[in-house]
Structure formats: structure tokens, C-alpha cells
Image (cartoon, rainbow over all chains, first blue to last red; front, side, top):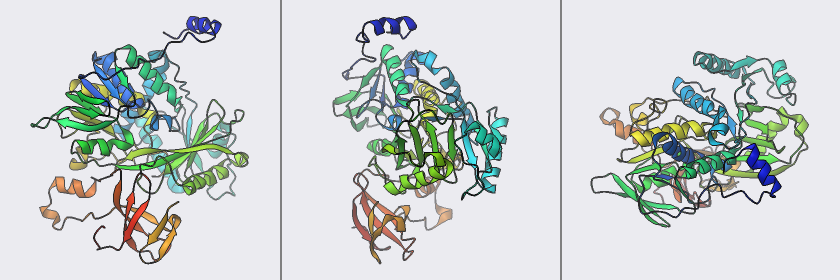
Length: 416
Length: 89
């Protein structure tokens, strides 16, 4: 059922009991053209664009847990495209442009809100680095502007710009088109769209092995719900990518770390933008429910525990309390961890692997949510045609052999 | 927070330590004879296992020495710590 004013009014009159399931409950078939491992935002977007733009709908999206229950449901939903290098700018800007019309494209309100992302500078080095980013972004046609502490205060009145704090704010880089979106709605919207186009979304179906022919190419996957044949497999498994790729004998330049986030009790609107700080190591925005959404860097050691150490969150809150003294007395409602796959150059890997028929989309590290539509779009192109889209061509696995790294370590929201 | 048994100082809180990545990665002995694939393996490829993992830690706020540790990456339980040069248990 398409969402429209008419359907909303009609269902409101019917007590909202008339809404159908948003996607089909699918049982695995013995064979598909393409199997995608991982029903998070990136995997579902890949399936959607494969069906919508490439006419391939004989696809299964396999999910070991529930749809959107991994990092898609655990991130802090920040969207921006102000990356340093040209390759990254093109990829993330491609995603940002898709965000702008995504609700209309999917007929599903993903609540994309370009409320502005402000990245604070606290030291001379921060100022130089931020201005270098701004210049690079403007050359790349991406909006990013330098603002003074007073302008930052005007943009976010909650901010403390006093000179007497440990790391006084010297200015900020502001991307006005950046913002947030509703993370669950992105997964649900893509799932609904893909399912309507014939894609099978199979939950509670964990991949336990990748089958290969004697000549090396992939022939299918073993799962907890039986074997499934496929000539093309796309692994979009975030923190578990190394585990899955090991099933095909491929070693990856990845390490998996817990990344924590937390939300406060809900309050009236007090913050209308996103504020990030590299140096004091924290970022914050306010959700439409009123909760303050807070995050920072990864935990110190690799882990698959989907939880993190309390002292990491405490460190984040120290920084939040200094930047936003008005929220010091607020209580935190929940905190959680997701497992992020971090590459040595902090850029993703999207493309072929040494195994014929096996493709991978991983390495998004701490910042994959913002790229969801663009990542799915270019990965769908790669899976459909066997060749990369122009925007993901530089993001090969082979760059770790050739040395053509895309070093975005300094460009991420927080120091890793 | 982990309680990490330093092989020299005994059990200490995680705050005293710095994680230093996967253990037992040896730099190629003869760089000029090392292929691109071998450099890739040394510089970038990591085991990243779900389960038993051998890693290095440094007791930064204690004896400041490196040591090795076997930890379960699902439960974060530390199974053993041992001095550099010793074989993984």
C-alpha cells in the first residue's frame, strides 16, 4: 500500500488496523541470481537499486538476526559529505544527493532533516585542518563554511564558547546540508521497496559457509536455513565481514571495534543542529523524540561483544558536559554498542575480491550510515555489471596492495 | 573495564594499558626481497577473529612494557597473558 494523505486518513478512521505488512515474509528458494549477506541499510539499499535500476529482482537478502538490527539501528544517524579527498567527496556527496529525495523515491518518510552539521575547532591545528577541509570541499562543489565562535553560538545557543574552558572553541566548520535521518525508517523503507519489486528478505538466516567450485568461483552459501545457490554474492556485513570473508579464504584489511552511543531522557527541543568535536571527542544532536543522541570514538580494543567499556562513555560525557553545560544534570536512558569494521585508511572497500563472483561492501567504520543510499547504489551497479561505478572505482580491496590509499583518518568526525 | 594481568606487575585496570593490535606479526626480514603481497599482509591484513585472538598490550601507566595477551573477542575474557618472545599458549 502506498503512503498518501488518502491512505493515512482512511487508516486513521479504521483505527490503523488496515496497514498491511511492509515486506513479505520470504522462505529461501534453492537458487537466486544474487545473494546479499546482511539486511542492514547498505544491503537492503543494494537490493533495492539492483531491482529498481538494473532489473534484477531474483535476489535474496540474508540476515542472521532481524532486519536493521545491527549498526543500522545502533548509529547516531549523522549525515554529511564534507570529506577531505576527492574520491570520498564524490562518494559521500552522491549519497547526500540521494538522501535529499529518498523519502519521495521510497514513498516512505525517512525523516531526512538537513539541520546543519557543525564541527568544532579547539586548537590552532584544528583551525588549520578545518580550513583545509573547507577549501577542499569548496573546490569539490560541496558546501562547507568557516564560522566564528559567536556565529557558532548563534547557530547552536546551547554551546559554551567561554574562553575559560579546557579547550575553548576557536571556530567551526559548518555544512548546512548535513543533518540526520531516521535510521530504522531507512532500513524499513528500502526493505519495503525491495520486497515490492520481488526481492526476498530472509531474516533469522545466518550464513555459515561460502561454497566455491573447484575452479575457484562462488557457487552459493550454506545457511542455518539450508544451502542457497548463487553465482554472485555480495557481502555487506559490517563488523562481521572478516568472519564471512574467511569462509571464502579471503583475508581482509579490517579490524572490528565496538562503537558506543547513548541517549538521554527526552526533553523539549533544545538543539536544532548536529555538533561534533574531534579534539574533545564527542558529538551530539537531538532526535525528534527529544532525546539527546551522543557518541564518540571506538573502544580501545577489537571485539565482537556489541557492548563497550563504561569509561569510554564517561569520557564522552565529560566532553559533552564541558561543551553543553546546560545538560549536565540530565540522565542518560540507554547506551549500547555496535561492531564497526575499520580499515587502515578509514575509507570503505566496495567492489570485487580475489574470488570470482564474490563482492564486498565493507570498511565503513564509524561512519557508514550517512553513505547508505550511495553505497547501495554504487554496489548495485558493481554487482549488476561486474564493474565498479565511477564513484566506487577508487575504493578497491587492491588499494592495500597498490598503495593508492584514500586516507580519511583525519577527516572522520572523531579521532579513531 | 577489563582487569588485565600484566606479566610483570600483576592484575591492573584497563585504564593503565594501551591496546597495540594483533600480536606475532613479524616485519619481513629482507625488505628488498619482499613482494607487494607480503607487504600487504604485514602492513594491512589482520586476522580479526571472532573468538580467540592474540594481541599486544602496553602497560603505559605502569612498567611501560609490551606483552602479549590471548582474549576471547566475543566475551572479552582474557585467557592468558605472556611475555614477548614466548609462544602463544
